[in-house]
Structure formats: C-alpha cells, structure tokens
Figure 1 (spheres, rainbow, N blue to C red):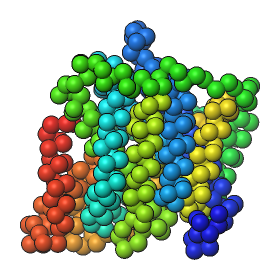
Figure 2 (tube, rainbow, N blue to C red; figure 1 turned 135 degrees about the vertical axis):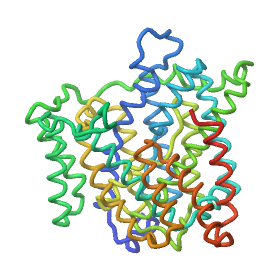
Figure 3 (cartoon, rainbow, N blue to C red; figure 1 turned 60 degrees about the vertical axis):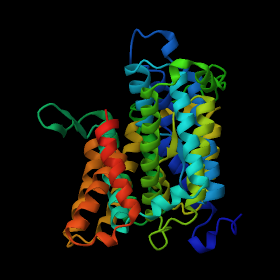
Length: 443
C-alpha cells in the first residue's frame, strides 16, 4: 500500500493521510445535509409533492456518489481530492431547472446523466487533459488564489463574520453572536497551532471547536448515534424515465445540459489544479495522471444521477485535508470510507456545523492565496487576466465565472502586446466558448 501510493516519495505516512482524509470529510460533511435540503426544495413552501425529491433517498445518493468518486480518485488518480455533489450545481438543478423552468426532477437527473456521458467521452479520448494542460501557468496560479479567496469568503459568511448589507452588499456581522464567537475561537486556535507548525492543525482545530461548542450549548450533543439507512428506491433509476417522455427533448433542456457540462468542467478543473498546486503535485505546469483524475468525476456523476443526485465534482474542501498533511490518494480512500460510514451514523453529523468548518475554510484560503507570489505582476498582459480570474470568483460566487473572465481577457491582452503566437490555440477556443456562454447561457 505504501509503495502504491508512494508514501516515501511524497514524504507522508498513514497517520497524516488518515488525518488528512478525515479532515477533508469533516470539512465537506455539510453536503450530506445541504444537498438533500436543496434538491428537495425544502425552503420552498406549498409545492406539489411531485416536484420534491425524497430527502432520505437523496441523502443516500449523495453519500454513495461521494464515496464512489473519492475511491476512483484515490485508486486511479492517486490525489488527495474528494468528490461529492457540487454546491452551485445542485442549486441550479433545484431552483433553475425544477423550480423556474418547471421541469420534473427526473428530467434534471437525465440532464446530469447526459452531461456526464459527454465528460466520460472527453476523458477517454484525452481531450479533457489536453484542455487543462493548455491553460498558461499564470492563470493556473490565479485560479488557485481565486478559489482561496472564494472559500475564505464562504468561511467568513458561514461564521457570520461577514453578512449581507443592503447598502454596501456586505458588512461586518454581529461578533457577539454565539456561533460567530465559536468560529472566531476555532480560527484563533487553528492559527496558533498552524503557526507552531503542528501537523493536522486544521483537523484538531475542528475537534476543539466542536468540544467548545458543546460545552457552551452552541452545538447540540447527539441523542442518537446510529440510525437506519434510508431507502434509495424513490429516486433510484428515475433518470431513465425521462428518456421516454417527449417533453424532455427541447432546446431549453439542451441549454440545461450544456450548462451542467460547462460549469462542472471548469469548476472541477479549477479545483484539481488548485489542490494539486497546494500539495506540490504539479509537474512542469501539468497535472500528472490528469486523465485518471478526471475519470473519477465522470463516473461518480453517472452513478450519482442513477441513484438520484446532482452533478458530482471535486471539492475544494480537499485543500483542508492537504493542509493537514494529506499528499496521496490514500487520503481520498479514507474520506470515502467516512462517507460510507455516514450512512449509518448520520445523527453524529449534527455536530459539524458551519461555525465549526468556517475556520478551516478561512485558513485554507490563506494557504491557497500564496500562489499569487508566482504570478508576474509586472507584466500587465498577465496581471489583468490573472486579477480578473482571482477577484471574479468571490464576487460572483462562481469558480467557473472567474475562470471565464480571465480566459476572455488573456488572449486579448496577449494579442495587443504582440504575443499572439505564445497563446495556445485552445485558449482561443476557450475565448469563443466563454463569450458565447455569457451571451446565451448565463441566467
């Protein structure tokens, strides 16, 4: 096992990989609760039951899709990157496809299934790997930094440190709020341990924060440890019913499929590059075993759509595991194991609140923004697309939008500078695709 995952070469061991894998799971465990709530449109009242997916079935589908994707990533890609149904994509699935367009959720699952087949075809032919490797190194660093800012902003919002402000869009929250104080405590503890160079500081910070939350009655102590695994029957295989429905074959559904395809491709690519950079696994601006890593989300999305959940993608929260020492695919296997265990121990997940995970997201953001130092800011033709890539992610709450902004301006600035021949032909293709996306597909 050590030799397969190259522990010695990567300077890691079982303890670090286990802690890293567990940390990643804790950082992304919220998806087991948030995804079912989102896909069942729980926040929308007075909806027909036919428009709502079954909560328990979606929970099981979420855990299984995450486990399958993480196992494939660990065994084939050998990266410490976990997968699960993606945030943003699940909201598009529920609120745009089902609620706004009025499409049955079975049709939305079918759109996910078809987009996943396209991904699988692109992966098998090697085109996805070629597309990622065509991205210039400066933009890859900008993507990493942008994602760092994005997840830090998410952490600050989850902690209640930053809140909505009608006058200024965002503002400082109520720092006297109990959960906000708990998050600030967790941040302080984690910063102290990180500064002291303690391995697994992010993980231990989460544990200490949970204990503190229970002591001050900010986190409920679970009154039940083991629960029955819900039935997946209400959603399993429902995806295939859409193909026999003539109303599925519309131009609107084609646009929905392309949106799933577009957003997942660049969200996943951005996450892979960012986490691999953080772990020091990029080689000559290329992602080793990229084809195998990209194979994971294709299969996981197919499996997830069959069981009953939205598109599965690589999770930026994996960077929390990397910060705790994870360097190999063994950490992804650990994360997958915890997702499978969560099927039986769902009541325990109630302790992993947003206040608990917020410090981890903030700290990871600090680590990821360090890639800004590798960008040649003195070259204006590089600085502009890099900056737009970075700043657009937190401001638009979309990794894909940030990538699009940078990829549109990169060819423009390079051409004006007289360096058009230095631009990879694929980057010109990206330019056209992103312009068309903003014109025709954005909502």
